[in-house]
Amino acid sequence: MGSNSKAEKILSAYEKAAQEGIDPRCIPQKLKGPVPIHDEIVYPEYTEEEQSNWKFLYNRQMSFLPGRACDEYIDGAKALNLSSDRIPHLKEISHVFNETTGWKVARVPGLIDVEDFFGLISKRIFPSTDYIRTKEELDYTPAPDLFHDIFGHMPLLTNTNFASFYQQFGIASLNATGIDRKYLETLHWFTVEFGLIKKPEGMRIYGAGILSSLGEVQHALSNDVEVREFDPDKIVVEEYDVWHLQPVLFAIESFEQLEDGFKSWTKRKKLLN
Image (cartoon, rainbow, N blue to C red; front, side, top):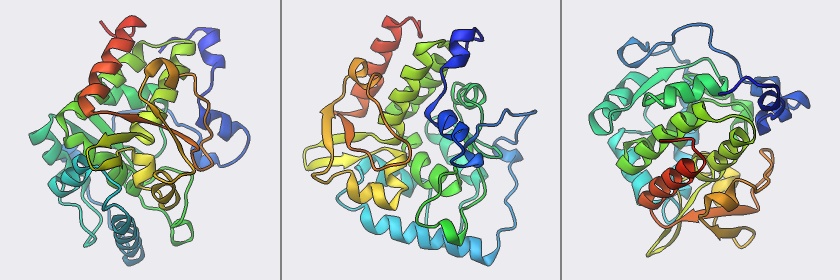
């Protein structure tokens, strides 16, 4: 991404929140060197409480997903062998990715700088934390943790169209400067994190921020939310707040539409060839 002064003045929503002192863990950190990828990832010695926290979060969230989460997400969770039995091993997930969509997993220390994040995404490498929230933060944590990364994000990376879209998103983000960086951040929020998809049986959720959140998964399909058609030009100028339940969401017709619509928009913006 560009280094001109105009680009540097445009902060992400998380960077703004961090400047306001909401939580220092939400300050993106620059990677200081290579991170473990794929077979280099070691499984941590999780405590009984940490394993218990995963089991509680997994079972609670899964109880809300029937009739809410899209089939592609549910199929992905099954492909990754996610269960309440234990915290998943990032290396094992990486192997499933590599066999299905050509992706791999990297272990990162926390919320990382956007250039580092999308640099990895552009290479089909998903950066994930390997620590889990504490017992005191089971209902809500502002900081990224493995439950959000694994339970929220990873199942859809087994879907060919979504996996392709996300790699293209990474490439476009590295090419973006100035206002285009903010546009892409907003587009990421309303698709990857808080996206909905129309299905013959009704509206369903695919966004990781909804699927991994107790409050959002109950809120997203309620009458308190205004659902709008997928249109990148309208999405990128929509305002949002990372700390409150979302009043406006956007719905795609299919993951093919997400991939094709994003490509068309980024090519028009000269962010992709």
